[in-house]
Figure (cartoon, rainbow, N blue to C red):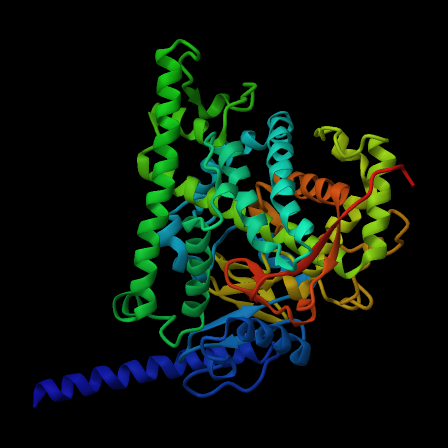
Length: 514
């Protein structure tokens, strides 16, 4: 009898605690917009089950219907605040102390506590170590790799042009981007473009889908229960094993190369101290740095190295794939913009524009290309949302938001604010011309995030995008495929097409310069 009384008492206390928390959250929610939540499931019934494009479309429609800043209810008292207004976005990303939100915990078994997820001192020291690998002197050498890999891409895609067939541009771009990140940042050639069925590319795509499905699962607030009971979690563990095996193979391959070079006397002792990185003219790859750097006199552990390699392999190929493919998607739909861009590359590079090697300095001379890339990143930002968790209380919309609250910042929605971007669905590179008297503010356009945790590789991504676009347009006209109007988008970890981007290519004639 006493046991029953004790259990009932615990149940009553738990219910009272939940009720008290519910009233507190309802007070905060009253300062934001949003539909009326289900008493138990919150907004979860609004999202279609296992329909990833539908989940994304629902997220966007909620903002279209209810406004910029929403209070999003999950199971019981699980919740997050979703903000798109510039003032509130600034408060979140510029807060003195923040962490990544709960959604990033879902990818921690894969990416570990790498630069994307880590916080505090660990994040600060890792950022300091890694930043020099994106110095413009090192980026100059990366452009050489982009040139070579883009030439191979053009050769492969030429087969589709010669056959006159429609094909999905997203897949070959993904292989190209993977080859590029492996050679530039890892110092290893994996020849993905020669292997269209690359397992790593497919595993990353499926992993991203599983993460999104987990975010909107009824058990998302109970990660341990989900991890051990759900079939998707079982599949995720298998994928993680394969993904880790791939990155381990990349790391070990580079270790062997460096060891062989030392034994042959081609390189000396490459040990690099973290505090000396800014003063040293490092030409080594990102992976070389991780293998040789010491922090406090100690090298990074194998686990430390793998979590950073996993992070950069994913971010360095998946996001740039979307950025490049989406640019071709827009150019295929807007031939007049494509031809204007083609004219610019002729004007800048001259008569032999197809064969002029692109350099870091040359790429600074394409103002219209800059505008096209920026507008493509506005309409279809590869990272369509970011998440933050408050470490300290902040004031927002006239109410105190307590530490520990998770925020989602949907960049895709921010970039469609009609007050900043009139007729926001129209592809118009002139929005980013110097003549625009009303340019977007610093929190109206954030394709690479904002604040101290912005994308460390944004210059890398922009260079790769520009090289690829120039090389492609120098050889082909990009036309929309017949299925182009049916393209739907989905966002998991990265914004991507649901079933590819169908295009056709037509070889350009090179008799003369227009």
